[in-house]
Image (cartoon, rainbow, N blue to C red; front, side):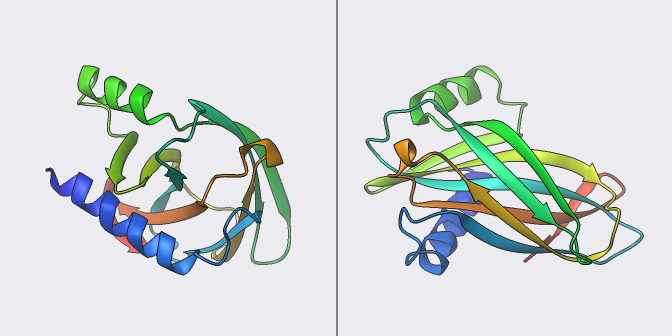
Length: 158
């Protein structure tokens, strides 16, 4: 098992614990901090699914609210099928933008949503992620921000 897989399992466990009361209620909310003016950031979407989740991808609506209250929205297609991501990772081990890990009756997916962000405002951003009720068995959706220096992942920001 690679360090990255262990990291995904660890983060998934933390997400599951921190969001266990969220269930399928959605939307899921995260606060990310982008305060260092000399850094760029990457934001990944982490999701936790039941092992029998039947979809290979789901639509997500993401809303980001800046520290001064300006709203930005985006609709994306989130790749989430355990089998399809596993096969893709085996065929493309150099592509670390997406990964998947299984533990017990659930699996976690991490996908790099945005990379090398230089935010228009520095401070705490509120991120809300939602999906259609059709996909109600999604257990957790969370945005996680990494601060980058010199183009390398450097520090996890919560």
